[in-house]
Image 1 (tube, rainbow, N blue to C red):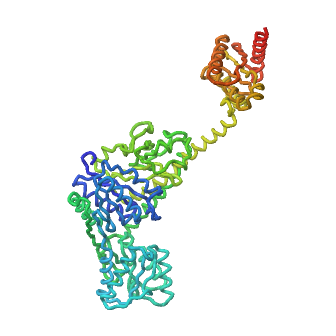
Image 2: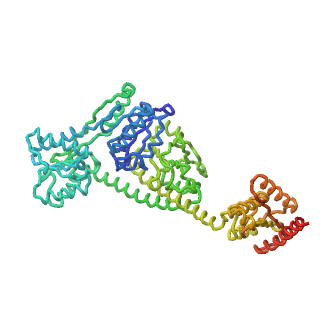
Image 3: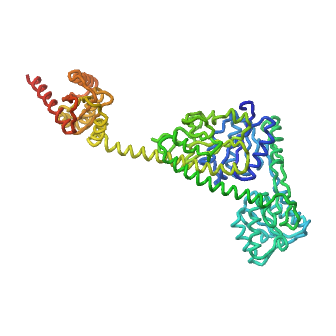
Length: 628
């Protein structure tokens, strides 16, 4: 429960389809008075492979918060993936959340099944008993598909009860798609065995069958009657209109509400209830159907949606290109808020936004409770400058209290890039229209491309900087090499305030050849690194350092240092190092320290020359003290 509302987690696919979004609208209308709020967890397409793990779209289910979810509804009929359904049921049961499944029968769930077989029985009986047709042909879906098999069983059953023969030649497989159905109808026409009626397992195949028959001058329904199944909107604007079977979304929503009211009493028991689709009589079977929709009005609406889609697609392409060029998430938020994507928030995993991480090698399937999310876009933000901010998965989305209290349906869809889930978008349209729902896949695709392109460019820039760094940094000491130092020294001089002075320190490791010859080059490298660390420790943080020779290093400090105090710091550093390093040799370095004049500007060679002279003076003095 959340904000005194019981939360329904509706897991489904293809919210852009009329059947899907009409059910959501009807369900919201039915359950809102009962104190429910709907969270839709949507995949923009049916998950094609029979797998749950590894799908970028089903990653959205990982964000389901069972601390607030009161019931899970799995719309198996549109998900069409057994593995996804099973995984969702298992997840819900693990959290003691009751489950309603719209599809097949599952143990421990309340199951709502469409009585497809009996619905198809009615349409076959209608053709035989009302129109007295006996030469029938069935345009099936995929061979072996359960939904197609239900209808094929009904076809056989009615033929048998009416004493009509059945054989395999009476079945073609149109795979539920127009192209395959057209191909199979062409074969049927070419064979010369034209039936009196072709009964199709769905409406799209019925429309395709009618098109092929019309091309061959075969009239529907005068020569061949045609029926469909599903009740898609297009069947109302064809000539003739298609006789079909329709599942009323209001009937399904009413049955769902009745199941919700029974959940408390079920306590994990299995129950199955049926919703019977209704026979929709139109002209393609030979009847005179009731006119239900103005074709011109429907086509005008359809064309308006198409033009709107095309215009918005162009706008989204421009925005996507701009986002990919952005230098920061703040700029990304500005580009996205161009009045094309509205009633939407985007939450991206913080790990994905780390430009140092390869975006296609991120950790997948980590418990989302361990992840931080960054709100990178909020269409409802009213301030002047939006600054992305971090939320936990428990917070779900901005404005959650307002959205729930005002009865908005929240639609969550996974965002992903190169098969890697990166977060999710939350859509909360104020108007539940099919046109709005149709925008969701379009917007999700644009957001995926935008964030993916932005992230790729950031990672590319990071790699380029890393490569550049490799060419500028000495790997042994971590100091600049000469190439890198000269570039940074030039910047330092350009930013140098007039009259400011520099302290130049040259440090040279003593007895490197002795260490290498007697203890090996590994120990020589240790000693060189020690001198580099001495420079870094002794000099101010904003100093520049370079290793320009085997054992020679240089520091440029943008300030005036006390020469004797600096040398004393070196001495103390090496004394402490030699006392704790447990080496068989002593590490020492000679230094030359030069302080520039107020207006003195030295090139690299002059830096070395000035400090080198002083360093050799120190070496000479030290040698004299040692021999004296």
